[in-house]
Image (tube, helix red, strand yellow):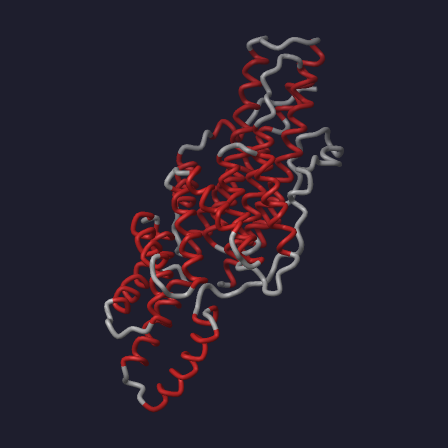
Amino acid sequence: MSRALVLLSGVYLWVLCAPLLLGEPNAAMRSPPSMKGADRQPPRPRWTASYTLARLNKTAALMCSLFFLLALVIPSSVLADSRVLFEQAGQLKDAEQCEQAIQIYKELLAMPELSASLREPSLYNCGSCYEILGNLGKAKQFFLQLAGSNGSQGLSRDALFRIAILEGRQGNHIGSDRRLRCLLRGRSTADDRVRIHIELADIKILRHQRRKAAHHLRRAGTLLSTLKEPLAPWYVARQQLLLGDLFALESSLISLNVVNPKRVVKRLRRRGALLDRAQQHFVAAISTQSPRWMQAATLHLAEAFLQLTREMKSIEAALEADQLSGSPQDREHLRYWLSTRRPAMARKAFESLQLCVDVKTETGIASSYSKDCKANIDDFDIELLTGPDPTP
Protein backbone atom coordinates (compact mmCIF):
# COMPACT_ATOMS: atom_id res chain seq x y z
CA MET A 1 0.00 0.00 0.00
CA SER A 2 1.51 3.35 -1.02
CA ARG A 3 2.36 6.06 1.47
CA ALA A 4 -0.05 8.41 -0.32
CA LEU A 5 -2.95 6.02 0.28
CA VAL A 6 -2.03 5.72 3.96
CA LEU A 7 -2.03 9.53 4.23
CA LEU A 8 -5.33 9.66 2.37
CA SER A 9 -6.81 7.23 4.89
CA GLY A 10 -5.57 9.41 7.73
CA VAL A 11 -7.13 12.52 6.21
CA TYR A 12 -10.38 10.66 5.78
CA LEU A 13 -10.44 9.55 9.41
CA TRP A 14 -9.76 13.13 10.53
CA VAL A 15 -12.55 14.53 8.33
CA LEU A 16 -15.26 12.05 9.22
CA CYS A 17 -14.69 11.25 12.88
CA ALA A 18 -16.40 14.48 14.01
CA PRO A 19 -19.98 14.15 15.31
CA LEU A 20 -22.87 14.64 12.89
CA LEU A 21 -24.15 17.67 14.85
CA LEU A 22 -27.76 16.57 14.75
CA GLY A 23 -28.48 17.46 18.37
CA GLU A 24 -28.43 20.69 20.29
CA PRO A 25 -25.07 22.49 20.07
CA ASN A 26 -22.44 20.90 22.36
CA ALA A 27 -24.93 18.31 23.64
CA ALA A 28 -25.76 15.92 20.84
CA MET A 29 -25.64 12.15 20.87
CA ARG A 30 -24.16 11.45 24.28
CA SER A 31 -25.65 7.95 24.38
CA PRO A 32 -26.16 6.59 20.83
CA PRO A 33 -28.50 3.59 20.56
CA SER A 34 -27.08 0.10 20.15
CA MET A 35 -28.07 -2.83 17.94
CA LYS A 36 -28.07 -5.38 20.75
CA GLY A 37 -24.31 -5.83 20.71
CA ALA A 38 -23.97 -6.40 16.96
CA ASP A 39 -21.16 -3.87 16.70
CA ARG A 40 -19.04 -4.98 19.67
CA GLN A 41 -15.92 -6.12 17.88
CA PRO A 42 -12.45 -7.17 19.03
CA PRO A 43 -9.43 -5.32 17.60
CA ARG A 44 -9.15 -5.74 13.84
CA PRO A 45 -6.63 -8.40 12.78
CA ARG A 46 -3.52 -7.47 10.85
CA TRP A 47 -3.06 -8.02 7.12
CA THR A 48 -2.82 -11.56 5.76
CA ALA A 49 -2.06 -12.70 2.23
CA SER A 50 -4.73 -13.78 -0.22
CA TYR A 51 -5.06 -17.39 -1.37
CA THR A 52 -1.67 -18.98 -2.09
CA LEU A 53 -0.13 -22.42 -2.00
CA ALA A 54 0.67 -21.88 1.67
CA ARG A 55 -2.98 -22.54 2.46
CA LEU A 56 -3.06 -25.98 0.82
CA ASN A 57 -2.97 -29.23 2.74
CA LYS A 58 0.19 -30.90 4.08
CA THR A 59 0.59 -33.14 1.04
CA ALA A 60 0.50 -30.14 -1.28
CA ALA A 61 3.01 -28.33 0.93
CA LEU A 62 5.36 -31.32 0.71
CA MET A 63 5.00 -31.32 -3.07
CA CYS A 64 5.90 -27.64 -3.14
CA SER A 65 9.06 -28.38 -1.12
CA LEU A 66 10.00 -31.12 -3.57
CA PHE A 67 9.40 -28.71 -6.41
CA PHE A 68 11.88 -26.18 -5.06
CA LEU A 69 14.53 -28.91 -4.79
CA LEU A 70 13.89 -29.96 -8.37
CA ALA A 71 13.87 -26.38 -9.59
CA LEU A 72 17.47 -25.97 -8.40
CA VAL A 73 18.51 -28.82 -10.68
CA ILE A 74 16.23 -28.30 -13.67
CA PRO A 75 15.09 -24.66 -13.62
CA SER A 76 13.85 -24.82 -17.22
CA SER A 77 11.48 -27.72 -16.56
CA VAL A 78 7.75 -27.50 -17.01
CA LEU A 79 7.39 -27.73 -13.24
CA ALA A 80 9.53 -24.66 -12.70
CA ASP A 81 7.83 -22.73 -15.50
CA SER A 82 4.36 -23.45 -14.16
CA ARG A 83 5.37 -22.46 -10.64
CA VAL A 84 6.83 -19.16 -11.87
CA LEU A 85 3.68 -18.44 -13.89
CA PHE A 86 1.50 -19.22 -10.88
CA GLU A 87 3.50 -16.84 -8.68
CA GLN A 88 3.31 -14.10 -11.35
CA ALA A 89 -0.45 -14.51 -11.63
CA GLY A 90 -0.80 -14.41 -7.85
CA GLN A 91 1.11 -11.14 -7.64
CA LEU A 92 -1.09 -9.60 -10.32
CA LYS A 93 -4.22 -10.86 -8.57
CA ASP A 94 -3.12 -9.43 -5.22
CA ALA A 95 -2.53 -6.10 -6.98
CA GLU A 96 -6.07 -6.43 -8.45
CA GLN A 97 -4.67 -6.44 -11.99
CA CYS A 98 -7.03 -9.24 -12.80
CA GLU A 99 -7.15 -8.99 -16.60
CA GLN A 100 -3.45 -9.87 -16.80
CA ALA A 101 -3.75 -12.49 -14.07
CA ILE A 102 -6.57 -14.28 -15.88
CA GLN A 103 -4.46 -14.65 -19.03
CA ILE A 104 -1.71 -16.36 -17.04
CA TYR A 105 -4.15 -18.61 -15.18
CA LYS A 106 -5.68 -19.67 -18.50
CA GLU A 107 -2.21 -20.42 -19.84
CA LEU A 108 -1.57 -22.60 -16.81
CA LEU A 109 -4.90 -24.42 -17.09
CA ALA A 110 -4.20 -25.18 -20.74
CA MET A 111 -1.16 -27.25 -19.71
CA PRO A 112 -2.20 -30.93 -19.68
CA GLU A 113 0.74 -31.80 -17.41
CA LEU A 114 -0.18 -29.19 -14.77
CA SER A 115 -0.28 -30.75 -11.31
CA ALA A 116 -3.47 -30.76 -9.21
CA SER A 117 -1.66 -28.68 -6.58
CA LEU A 118 -1.50 -25.85 -9.12
CA ARG A 119 -4.60 -26.57 -11.22
CA GLU A 120 -7.09 -26.27 -8.36
CA PRO A 121 -5.87 -22.93 -6.95
CA SER A 122 -5.57 -21.63 -10.52
CA LEU A 123 -9.24 -22.44 -11.09
CA TYR A 124 -10.17 -20.79 -7.81
CA ASN A 125 -8.11 -17.65 -8.35
CA CYS A 126 -9.28 -17.30 -11.95
CA GLY A 127 -12.88 -17.44 -10.76
CA SER A 128 -12.06 -14.87 -8.06
CA CYS A 129 -10.57 -12.54 -10.66
CA TYR A 130 -13.64 -12.77 -12.86
CA GLU A 131 -15.74 -12.02 -9.79
CA ILE A 132 -13.65 -8.93 -8.99
CA LEU A 133 -14.08 -7.77 -12.59
CA GLY A 134 -17.84 -8.19 -12.32
CA ASN A 135 -18.14 -11.07 -14.81
CA LEU A 136 -20.21 -13.23 -12.47
CA GLY A 137 -21.20 -15.80 -15.10
CA LYS A 138 -17.58 -16.61 -15.95
CA ALA A 139 -16.64 -16.66 -12.28
CA LYS A 140 -19.38 -19.16 -11.51
CA GLN A 141 -18.20 -21.46 -14.32
CA PHE A 142 -14.73 -21.76 -12.79
CA PHE A 143 -16.07 -22.30 -9.27
CA LEU A 144 -18.51 -24.96 -10.51
CA GLN A 145 -15.66 -26.72 -12.30
CA LEU A 146 -13.63 -26.73 -9.08
CA ALA A 147 -16.56 -27.82 -6.91
CA GLY A 148 -17.20 -30.76 -9.23
CA SER A 149 -13.62 -32.00 -9.11
CA ASN A 150 -12.32 -34.73 -6.83
CA GLY A 151 -9.53 -32.59 -5.43
CA SER A 152 -9.02 -30.67 -2.23
CA GLN A 153 -12.07 -30.76 0.05
CA GLY A 154 -11.19 -27.34 1.43
CA LEU A 155 -11.01 -25.73 -1.99
CA SER A 156 -14.23 -27.43 -3.12
CA ARG A 157 -15.95 -26.04 -0.05
CA ASP A 158 -14.56 -22.58 -0.78
CA ALA A 159 -15.85 -22.88 -4.34
CA LEU A 160 -19.36 -23.71 -3.06
CA PHE A 161 -19.11 -20.67 -0.80
CA ARG A 162 -18.18 -18.45 -3.75
CA ILE A 163 -21.06 -19.88 -5.81
CA ALA A 164 -23.47 -18.96 -3.01
CA ILE A 165 -22.12 -15.39 -3.00
CA LEU A 166 -22.46 -15.11 -6.77
CA GLU A 167 -26.05 -16.32 -6.60
CA GLY A 168 -26.81 -13.59 -4.12
CA ARG A 169 -25.21 -10.93 -6.30
CA GLN A 170 -27.25 -12.19 -9.25
CA GLY A 171 -30.45 -11.62 -7.25
CA ASN A 172 -31.11 -15.17 -6.09
CA HIS A 173 -31.03 -14.26 -2.39
CA ILE A 174 -33.16 -17.20 -1.27
CA GLY A 175 -30.93 -19.71 -3.06
CA SER A 176 -27.79 -18.03 -1.74
CA ASP A 177 -29.17 -18.02 1.80
CA ARG A 178 -30.05 -21.72 1.56
CA ARG A 179 -26.61 -22.70 0.24
CA LEU A 180 -24.78 -20.66 2.90
CA ARG A 181 -26.84 -22.12 5.74
CA CYS A 182 -26.09 -25.60 4.39
CA LEU A 183 -22.36 -24.81 4.46
CA LEU A 184 -22.71 -23.43 7.98
CA ARG A 185 -24.25 -26.70 9.19
CA GLY A 186 -21.45 -28.74 7.64
CA ARG A 187 -18.00 -29.34 9.04
CA SER A 188 -16.13 -26.06 8.95
CA THR A 189 -13.42 -24.13 10.73
CA ALA A 190 -14.02 -20.99 12.80
CA ASP A 191 -12.76 -18.69 10.04
CA ASP A 192 -15.12 -20.41 7.57
CA ARG A 193 -18.02 -19.72 9.90
CA VAL A 194 -17.01 -16.07 10.25
CA ARG A 195 -17.10 -15.58 6.48
CA ILE A 196 -20.42 -17.40 6.17
CA HIS A 197 -21.99 -15.31 8.94
CA ILE A 198 -20.75 -12.14 7.23
CA GLU A 199 -22.29 -13.12 3.91
CA LEU A 200 -25.54 -14.22 5.55
CA ALA A 201 -25.69 -10.78 7.23
CA ASP A 202 -25.37 -9.14 3.82
CA ILE A 203 -28.35 -11.09 2.50
CA LYS A 204 -30.43 -10.26 5.58
CA ILE A 205 -29.65 -6.55 5.20
CA LEU A 206 -30.66 -6.63 1.54
CA ARG A 207 -33.95 -8.22 2.61
CA HIS A 208 -34.37 -5.69 5.45
CA GLN A 209 -34.25 -8.49 8.04
CA ARG A 210 -32.41 -6.37 10.56
CA ARG A 211 -32.60 -8.63 13.60
CA LYS A 212 -31.25 -11.62 11.69
CA ALA A 213 -28.49 -9.47 10.18
CA ALA A 214 -27.50 -8.25 13.66
CA HIS A 215 -27.44 -11.88 14.86
CA HIS A 216 -25.04 -12.99 12.11
CA LEU A 217 -22.75 -9.99 12.60
CA ARG A 218 -22.71 -10.60 16.34
CA ARG A 219 -21.77 -14.25 15.77
CA ALA A 220 -19.02 -13.18 13.36
CA GLY A 221 -17.64 -10.80 15.97
CA THR A 222 -17.63 -13.48 18.65
CA LEU A 223 -15.85 -15.96 16.39
CA LEU A 224 -13.24 -13.39 15.38
CA SER A 225 -11.99 -13.32 18.96
CA THR A 226 -11.37 -17.10 18.85
CA LEU A 227 -9.35 -17.28 15.64
CA LYS A 228 -5.75 -18.46 15.91
CA GLU A 229 -4.87 -16.76 12.61
CA PRO A 230 -6.17 -13.29 11.68
CA LEU A 231 -8.96 -13.05 9.13
CA ALA A 232 -8.09 -11.59 5.74
CA PRO A 233 -8.61 -7.79 5.60
CA TRP A 234 -11.09 -8.32 2.73
CA TYR A 235 -13.60 -9.86 5.16
CA VAL A 236 -12.66 -7.67 8.11
CA ALA A 237 -13.46 -4.60 6.00
CA ARG A 238 -16.63 -6.23 4.70
CA GLN A 239 -17.82 -7.00 8.22
CA GLN A 240 -17.33 -3.37 9.26
CA LEU A 241 -19.01 -2.18 6.07
CA LEU A 242 -22.08 -4.32 6.80
CA LEU A 243 -22.23 -3.08 10.39
CA GLY A 244 -22.29 0.44 8.96
CA ASP A 245 -24.99 -0.55 6.49
CA LEU A 246 -27.06 -2.03 9.31
CA PHE A 247 -27.01 1.17 11.35
CA ALA A 248 -27.66 3.30 8.25
CA LEU A 249 -30.65 1.11 7.40
CA GLU A 250 -31.97 1.41 10.95
CA SER A 251 -31.63 5.19 10.71
CA SER A 252 -33.47 5.40 7.39
CA LEU A 253 -36.48 3.54 8.79
CA ILE A 254 -37.25 6.31 11.31
CA SER A 255 -39.92 8.30 9.50
CA LEU A 256 -39.82 12.09 9.48
CA ASN A 257 -43.33 12.32 8.11
CA VAL A 258 -44.74 14.12 11.15
CA VAL A 259 -46.13 17.64 11.44
CA ASN A 260 -45.15 18.53 14.99
CA PRO A 261 -41.79 20.43 14.98
CA LYS A 262 -40.70 19.02 18.36
CA ARG A 263 -41.29 15.46 17.17
CA VAL A 264 -39.36 16.20 13.97
CA VAL A 265 -36.33 17.35 15.97
CA LYS A 266 -36.54 14.32 18.26
CA ARG A 267 -36.61 11.91 15.32
CA LEU A 268 -33.79 13.73 13.56
CA ARG A 269 -31.63 13.30 16.65
CA ARG A 270 -32.37 9.56 16.68
CA ARG A 271 -31.51 9.36 12.98
CA GLY A 272 -28.29 11.25 13.58
CA ALA A 273 -27.25 9.05 16.51
CA LEU A 274 -27.64 5.92 14.40
CA LEU A 275 -25.76 7.50 11.49
CA ASP A 276 -22.96 8.37 13.89
CA ARG A 277 -22.67 4.66 14.75
CA ALA A 278 -22.77 3.79 11.06
CA GLN A 279 -20.00 6.30 10.41
CA GLN A 280 -17.76 4.66 13.02
CA HIS A 281 -17.98 1.31 11.24
CA PHE A 282 -17.53 2.81 7.76
CA VAL A 283 -14.36 4.52 9.03
CA ALA A 284 -13.20 1.17 10.49
CA ALA A 285 -13.70 -0.41 7.05
CA ILE A 286 -11.66 2.37 5.47
CA SER A 287 -8.83 1.95 7.97
CA THR A 288 -8.15 -1.58 6.63
CA GLN A 289 -6.84 0.19 3.50
CA SER A 290 -8.53 -2.29 1.17
CA PRO A 291 -9.22 0.00 -1.83
CA ARG A 292 -12.43 -1.69 -2.96
CA TRP A 293 -14.02 -1.50 0.49
CA MET A 294 -12.67 1.99 1.06
CA GLN A 295 -14.65 3.04 -2.00
CA ALA A 296 -17.72 1.14 -0.82
CA ALA A 297 -17.58 2.67 2.67
CA THR A 298 -17.20 6.23 1.40
CA LEU A 299 -20.07 5.71 -1.05
CA HIS A 300 -22.43 4.14 1.48
CA LEU A 301 -21.71 6.84 4.04
CA ALA A 302 -22.28 9.58 1.47
CA GLU A 303 -25.55 7.98 0.38
CA ALA A 304 -26.77 7.81 3.99
CA PHE A 305 -25.86 11.47 4.54
CA LEU A 306 -27.51 12.52 1.27
CA GLN A 307 -30.73 10.68 2.04
CA LEU A 308 -31.12 12.48 5.35
CA THR A 309 -30.02 15.80 3.85
CA ARG A 310 -32.73 15.60 1.19
CA GLU A 311 -35.34 14.76 3.81
CA MET A 312 -34.21 17.77 5.83
CA LYS A 313 -34.56 19.90 2.70
CA SER A 314 -38.14 18.62 2.29
CA ILE A 315 -38.91 19.59 5.89
CA GLU A 316 -37.62 23.09 5.15
CA ALA A 317 -39.95 23.26 2.16
CA ALA A 318 -42.87 22.12 4.33
CA LEU A 319 -42.05 24.88 6.81
CA GLU A 320 -42.07 27.48 4.07
CA ALA A 321 -45.44 26.15 2.83
CA ASP A 322 -46.83 26.37 6.38
CA GLN A 323 -47.60 22.64 6.40
CA LEU A 324 -46.36 21.95 9.94
CA SER A 325 -48.29 22.43 13.15
CA GLY A 326 -47.08 23.82 16.46
CA SER A 327 -46.46 27.30 17.73
CA PRO A 328 -44.60 29.93 15.69
CA GLN A 329 -41.73 29.63 18.16
CA ASP A 330 -41.49 25.85 17.62
CA ARG A 331 -41.50 26.22 13.85
CA GLU A 332 -38.88 28.95 13.98
CA HIS A 333 -36.70 26.80 16.24
CA LEU A 334 -36.97 23.91 13.76
CA ARG A 335 -36.10 26.22 10.87
CA TYR A 336 -33.01 27.46 12.71
CA TRP A 337 -32.09 23.90 13.75
CA LEU A 338 -32.19 22.68 10.12
CA SER A 339 -30.38 25.67 8.65
CA THR A 340 -27.37 25.13 10.92
CA ARG A 341 -27.09 21.37 10.31
CA ARG A 342 -28.30 20.46 6.85
CA PRO A 343 -25.50 22.26 4.88
CA ALA A 344 -22.83 20.71 7.13
CA MET A 345 -24.18 17.23 6.50
CA ALA A 346 -24.33 17.88 2.75
CA ARG A 347 -20.67 18.95 2.82
CA LYS A 348 -19.74 15.72 4.60
CA ALA A 349 -21.56 13.76 1.90
CA PHE A 350 -19.73 15.63 -0.86
CA GLU A 351 -16.34 15.18 0.87
CA SER A 352 -17.01 11.46 1.26
CA LEU A 353 -17.79 11.12 -2.44
CA GLN A 354 -14.67 13.06 -3.37
CA LEU A 355 -12.50 10.88 -1.14
CA CYS A 356 -13.98 7.81 -2.82
CA VAL A 357 -12.83 9.14 -6.19
CA ASP A 358 -9.42 10.02 -4.69
CA VAL A 359 -8.94 6.39 -3.61
CA LYS A 360 -9.63 5.27 -7.18
CA THR A 361 -7.18 7.87 -8.55
CA GLU A 362 -4.46 6.97 -6.06
CA THR A 363 -4.71 3.19 -6.44
CA GLY A 364 -5.79 2.94 -10.06
CA ILE A 365 -8.42 0.42 -8.96
CA ALA A 366 -11.85 1.16 -10.39
CA SER A 367 -15.05 -0.45 -9.16
CA SER A 368 -18.78 0.00 -9.37
CA TYR A 369 -18.48 1.99 -6.14
CA SER A 370 -16.05 4.53 -7.57
CA LYS A 371 -18.25 4.88 -10.67
CA ASP A 372 -21.28 5.58 -8.48
CA CYS A 373 -19.27 8.11 -6.47
CA LYS A 374 -18.31 9.98 -9.64
CA ALA A 375 -21.92 9.92 -10.86
CA ASN A 376 -23.13 11.30 -7.51
CA ILE A 377 -20.58 14.12 -7.70
CA ASP A 378 -21.64 15.00 -11.24
CA ASP A 379 -25.32 15.10 -10.21
CA PHE A 380 -24.78 16.69 -6.80
CA ASP A 381 -27.38 19.30 -5.85
CA ILE A 382 -25.22 22.29 -4.96
CA GLU A 383 -28.17 23.95 -3.23
CA LEU A 384 -27.82 21.35 -0.47
CA LEU A 385 -24.48 22.91 0.48
CA THR A 386 -26.03 26.28 1.23
CA GLY A 387 -28.97 27.22 3.42
CA PRO A 388 -30.97 30.23 4.42
CA ASP A 389 -29.40 32.55 6.95
CA PRO A 390 -30.43 31.16 10.34
CA THR A 391 -32.59 33.55 12.34
CA PRO A 392 -32.96 32.75 16.07
